[in-house]
Length: 95
Image 1 (cartoon, rainbow, N blue to C red):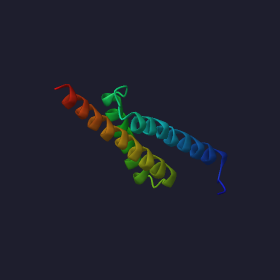
Image 2 (cartoon, rainbow, N blue to C red):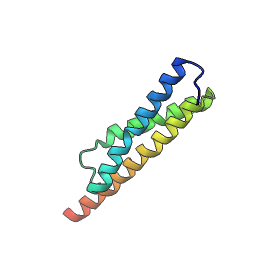
Image 3 (cartoon, rainbow, N blue to C red):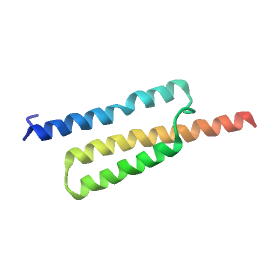
C-alpha cells in the first residue's frame, strides 16, 4: 500500500495506533466481566467525539478518517454497552 506522502503515512500509523489501543481495554472488560474502573462520562464524551470525527471524515471524503473512526466507534460503543450491562448486573446483585 504505497503512500502519497509522508504525512499520509503518519496519519495512517496514528489512526492504527489510536484505534488498536481500545482492543486491550475491551478484552480486559470481557475477561473480568467488570467495567468498574471505566468512567462512563469519559467514554460517552469520547464516543461522541469519535462519532463527530466520523461525520467529519464523511463530509471531507477522507477514507482513512472514516475507517479509523468507524472502527474506533464500534470498539468504544462496545465498551460502553458492556459498562452499562455490568454496572446494571452489579446493582441487581447488591439489591
